[in-house]
Length: 153
Image (cartoon, rainbow, N blue to C red; front, side, top):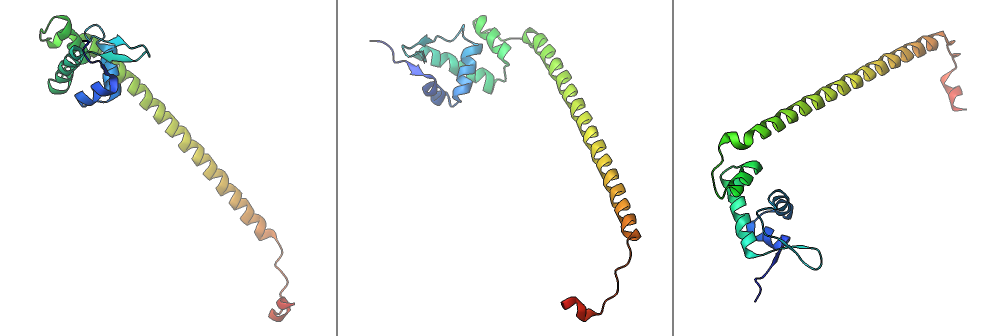
């Protein structure tokens, strides 16, 4: 009799992880997670895959391994990765992320400066317009004085 196969959502429930996390682990650790395709195209997992994902969950959540360190651990049959193994690429990735964040912050600062300049320009134009309107209003003749009872007619 065949072993029962579990779908992604069932595995996620067993591991107390989201379906997205299980799919990400499947993508990242495909070589070490036994998976099959059902007739409907869904991924189905034998119990050995669930055990492997429990190990992956333990390494990531409880031991604090990075994805590369988990891959190294799985590829070497359980060898504990040193910080040097996976960190060179991760450091390069982190440096690139820091560069991108700095570029995004600079763009944000430029946009804020442009918005403030535009607001200052609009404020200046509005102040000038109001000043001109006040001066024009001063040039208008005073209305003729009328007794108060003539306003009611």
